[in-house]
Length: 234
Image (cartoon, rainbow, N blue to C red; front, side, top):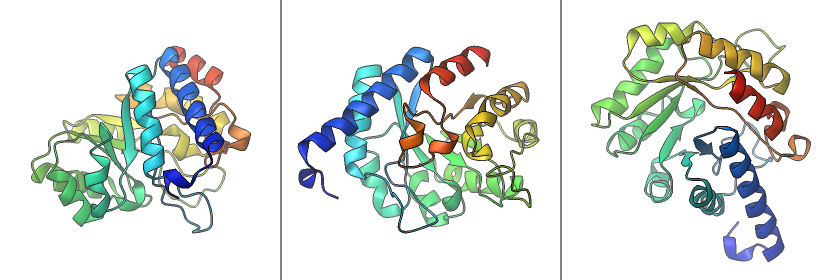
């Protein structure tokens, strides 16, 4: 959807909601804001992100808070657009082994957040990072976000083991995404604390001021109040 085709009140409400969330998270202790402006979804019939409109909201939030902007790039064709807006490019789990995309972002000097694939081994994750490093971009952050196993009690299975293993094998910073790895907000805080205890350099936490009405990932999102409590704990 083009920005110009949106009713003014819709755009205003979306932008206001983004700014409110960003400001609250910053006050709680966050130092980066991640927004899924292009969202790879299992079903083609669900919310796919706001595209460039979403990038403009993130820029407004950066101007307000000073937070770095993190957003996922899904294809080589999007790289040029994304680097005009964002501070960190995310490679999502589904694109961890998209080697054409890894080569393309390796030619940039934008920091890269590389998420582990849903069924990727640690060696495969490290080799994916090497595609970026080999292109001349040394600014890579590795993210453990849970792997697919037979267990269905949570969205994915958090591989806490991966954190100390990766820390022993690479000089790159290693962070944990307990929101995607659990898929359930009630488990985010304990798994986040486990990740820090295991040596993670940082966390990605989904936050929404009205999780029940979020367009995506509401079930795993913390309220701003719960996020602030978690930041103090970790």
